[in-house]
Amino acid sequence: MLIAFLAILSGAFVGFFLSLLGGGGSIMAVPLLLYVVGVSDPHIAIGTSAVAVAASAAMNLAMHAHRGTVKWPCAIAFAISGSIGALGGAALGKATNGQYLILAFAAAMVGVGITMLMRKSDAGDPNVHISPKLAVRLIPTGLVTGAASGFFGIGGGFLIVPGLIGASNMTMLHAIGTSLVAVTAFGAATATSYAMSGLVDWTLAILFMVGGAVGSYFGQFAGRKFEEKKGALNKVFAVFIFLSAAYMALQSFNVI
Image (cartoon, rainbow, N blue to C red; front, top):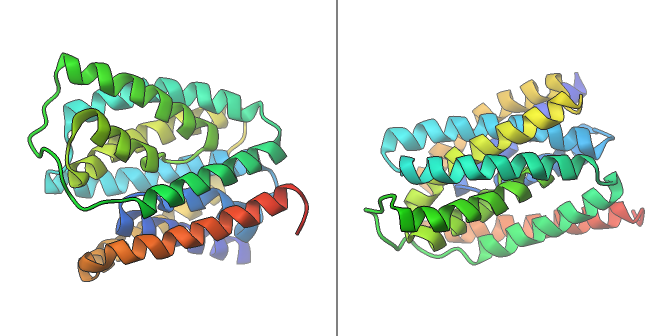
């Protein structure tokens, strides 16, 4: 019962911050599964996280689609190439020693924290449309970010959002909504790869998703209340990510 409660609570934490901040929250799924829920195998933590992240992203995608903030042609081009990369990244992740995988994940968390600190206000072109020239930039970016997502078992929104903005000059709001198509696709591809290798704890994944649904609901509510303070919230959450990354790195060296 305690494990089930911790899994739901951890899922709620991830869903809340993913919904509130528009990305970055899913990076906490793996450390929560490892150090709060108590999953002993990093590979199972990553596989289980991928299932939960994909489901949470799909729920948030439905809300963004309802608000019309998804650039579907750009999203589909990005997601298809990225899903191929995610399958390759997942295969590499499964073949990597668990201790080294945790250390690499900690380094990725630092990247997420830095990205969150560098977020800027909304700018860009709200009328972006797909074109051959744009597709040439989107597809390789999707491939690389998908590979990273598959390797670490994360949504990859912290890479996808700046990648979409850099390749298409779409607004931050549209980049966040559009990124959720890719996050869902990458998570599904990674989850499928790990599930086929028996590296998903489905009970924990379901409990995590239940918590994620509750957390997403309250995250949407909090987002409306703290619209003008999201910059400060990003900074606070980034510091929390840095501390978690340091803990994971020390754990990988058996220092603590």
